[in-house]
Length: 427
Ligand SMILES: [Zn+2]
Image (cartoon, rainbow, N blue to C red; front, side, top):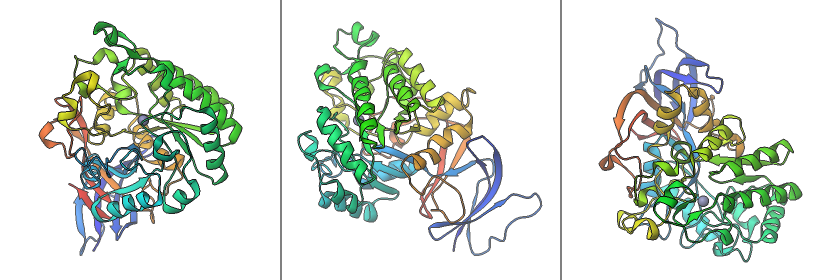
């Protein structure tokens, strides 16, 4: 028995929209046919989902998430994190390796993949670390980690401080055709600040994280990427300077790609209401000028894709206040509706653009066979209600943690059915 998804609206990168009937059989897309008025496909023996008036897209892809397992299961685990992803319409997620232990051995990669297969509801692709224990001192065994199934290397959470270490990592990754994914942060410029330099820091007498702490690593790393030929991917771009450096590097043919998070596209430090740690993340919310720069960077292709940096922390941890609480906010469950409401409904972006940056484009950047509704591809499909406005309610959050600044926001564009590998995993 398969699933017929009838009368849904599909959209491509050029915003060409078409009504389609889609048949899912087993874990693949079996048929995609144009809707012709007055005729309907033979659906007998199949489950039927009526998608009339709704958007039907490839399942969203999130290349930057924290599932917190192993080691921090009080914040999130693979079971809860993948369900939270499913609620947000994501069917493929790439998990960061800053767990405990960190993902720096074949055993830990196997642990993640086994857990994802038995307890997860969406596809989980692990990253391995660049350096052992993310300490920046010794490279991990890239070839062995690749063999085990990692899709790239990153010390996300911290920057690789040594240029030589980063260059060695890039050369090694390039030699086996793998990408380096960089959290860009120069520790000599960071002084334990909870927010960015800017109006909010000034008003509250706080030290701020300067923009240069991110951009200096971007500048250094694009030069190292040029020297080594590696595919270099910049995590969560948040500053005007980083956008400028990536744009310049791309003009020179350097193999650099980049990502941006919804919160950096929608919020600046001037929006932070007070000393509430649900507004604390790394990189921090920057100035309105930076927000404008990352928007323009995404629009002109300097920044390639949208990721959430889903980063759960417990309420207890976040109640420690701006200075002591850990960095990070949830991402999965509000990503699409937030961007749809703020950019598509306001006429700034086409629907096709937003969908592309969350589906096909991330698949292309990382060479993944997902993000498409083509016949024969994985049956990863998200159905979105574009009409209903709903408030973000804390009690509806599926993630084990609740740390988001968007509670109480009224948003439109809610995933209502998520199908991953042919199974309905959210409805
Ligand atoms: Zn990071």
